[in-house]
Image (cartoon, rainbow, N blue to C red; front, side, top):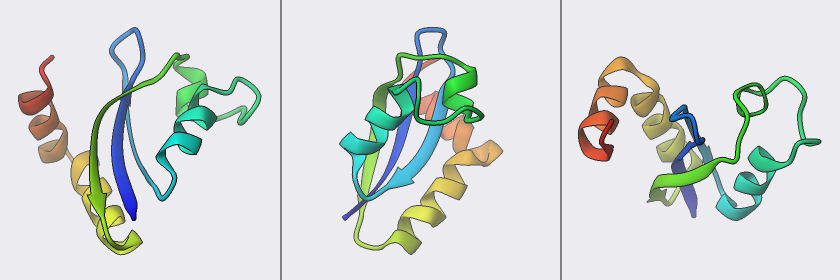
Length: 83
């Protein structure tokens, strides 16, 4: 099972990603020592999940991730998730 997920920090910044282990990936986003240059480190957490979708294959998850990262996808998220 693969997940497309949206996380948000306390300042309202969002991050869209995909993974096959959502709990582990969320812990990585919130781990100060995991990565030095990632968006979720630069923008500071804590990051909390606000949306997720399940897919059977990585290909499907990657396709949906690209859709959500597009202008139309971000508009869809704002419409369905609020400001």
